[in-house]
Image 1: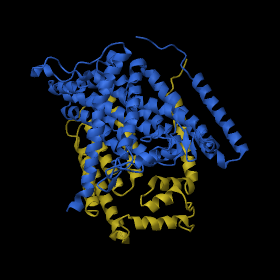
Image 2 (image 1 turned 60 degrees about the vertical axis):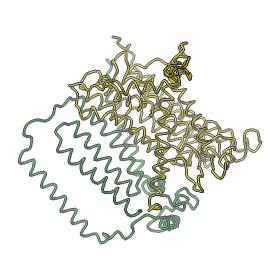
Image 3 (image 1 turned 180 degrees about the vertical axis):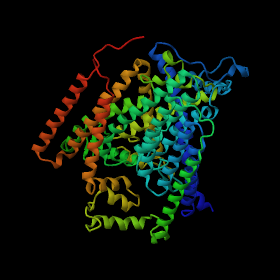
Image 4 (image 1 turned 135 degrees about the horizontal axis):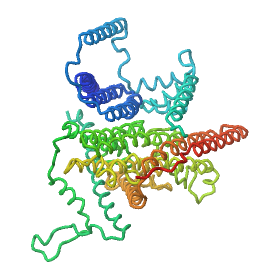
Length: 204
Length: 425
């Protein structure tokens, strides 16, 4: 069961993602296309969750589906776009699309062909591996310059056999990538202030 | 084969029990409360007649049951009404939209801890469907999908009032999602945890976040408690700010009064569901109430101790056994239900006492007041949590900087205020 279920869920969500992706280009109504993108994103989030990356999957829904696509839909609705009619497919467009797809497929084959770890040497994430990695994380080494404390939430959770993905992401962000994180924070703050000051009405 | 299927069956039972036998019945219950409580507020009687129609069977009198069957009558009425689809709508999205408002609200139930563990036939099971490590984030993520239902309902109706309602709701929900997410950061930092079950367990031992009347050393009546409760009481400040912002944002997210701009009758006929009738309208209605129940559940879980009864009583309740069945979980579930109903009554009280906001006031409250307040609150909480590790000098400097920044923000907000009086139609 434990082997069967993930792959079944994978195929369901992979199918959903592909279906959404195809529908984006195939449907002619802009709102339908936007909803197809939403479907695609939900499928992607499902794939992340099958990989035990709950945090990434849920952030994917929260940010892309819940905020960005809603704004897209909002704009599309306000612009009152009509259903695209007539022959919109030009030869140049099709050629450009096909060449992009071909380039991507060649790249994918190259990457997958060159990767010797195709056999998934360290597949499923089980309790034993988590306990082992908990011990690795507490020791300082070249791979792990910022060890976590022996009684931290990360170690506790790993020893119980549940993946503390939020804590792990947080630990990584606030130790190894602390400076870039702070910079990004300042950047976002500047952007927020900028948006507010730009969108303010000029008073006479 | 049976062992192969057992986990699935248990999950299925939990889903059916908690979603369809606990959450969904709460919807008609809150509708009934809404009608009776609003009647009390307005000095009316309210629906008190619907009960068992015994006269139909030859008895002398009907048994009225205090009108408790009223929601059922409402439901039957809505089901039997003509399901009319106007000819000018976009059919696919018109049909999809009501489902899209209900489904997310029902999905979010799966992370809410309804009670402690129960033991049946020697098998211990927790009263939460999916005990994932990302409770609040999951609720926000899935609840943010509700906006599609409302937006699509407004757009696909192909008529102007629903469209305005849909657009309003989109802008409103996105604006308040920011305040909603930012406001609970202090709470999550305090618990150091995103798992709702463990958040509740922490509150069982250390007092509810908003009512720290006991901790690991005893309750308010013991001296040891007072020696160790300074930080808890100090944290009440950010916790209370977070609670207020979070609760008001939940009002806005669920489109409840005083923020029900997307459907306000005086301006938009019926708002986004103007063109809907029968069960499709009922689904919007149900979605709103289900979202309200889930919102209350989240507030209760984060701030008011979830299913815990407090004062160290929970260990005894959890250990209760009747004929070998550990039923402590069910008692905890009733406690949770009680808190939930109290909060739903609060929602209703607000709806029938506070007048509706104007749209610009709503936006201003979200972006100018709550956004900044939540941000400052994050820093207050950070200062309080980090204080034991810092020196007195750094704490003082931090506090002064925080006060200065707060004053500056308030000053900027005051200065940039639009002085011209708003135009009235």
